[in-house]
Image 1 (cartoon, rainbow, N blue to C red):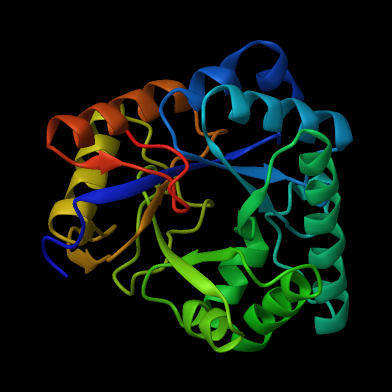
Image 2 (cartoon, one colour; image 1 turned 135 degrees about the vertical axis):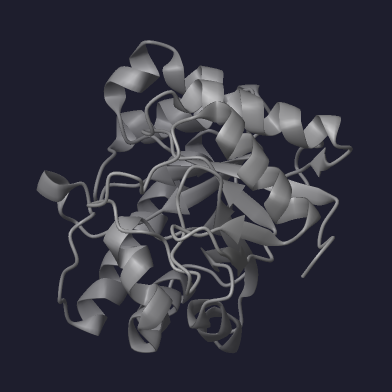
Length: 261
């Protein structure tokens, strides 16, 4: 959809790398985003990293969300697994609940949930897996926003489960012509150049399109744009994406309206 939104949320996956929390890299990212997806014990994260990340988010007026993934720390949750749907639902529930408990102790509220890595990418095409994610979140609460890939069936599944949804696009990832994300095994899967990421984000907001790996345009109508915290040069990318959008007259605001850009 062209000219889709003049307002957008910028989200970032966080609480995944203790060193980035300790050296100030993560907090620097907070200055450019509006929503933080906090790793909650599956692919990464523990009570300490959750607490520190939530405290940083509160200092910068950033909305807090849960980022559950496969409990596969060895592969950072990025390896596609075949797990029983009930096991997926229970794992998602426990991870989101764990973050909610830490958030409560920090006087913060979890307002959205975004699956991580392989769990996210598999659910893009697998409606049953997407349903298991929704079921896991529903065991905790239903009054949160579920985030999924723009244009994918997973959003329909989340809506059918009774959740508000947010379609997500990616400033720092290359797309395939079918609208899915290019696999990280390909050298060009990541967009590392801040200016290129800024142009991609602006195209998504102003024209509703992204450039695919073959040079074609892919329709991307999104309410939130992701910048990965572990992408090399993520801080510079986030600064440039935010600057590009704001200079184009686009308002940067969290999904739940906690912060205005």
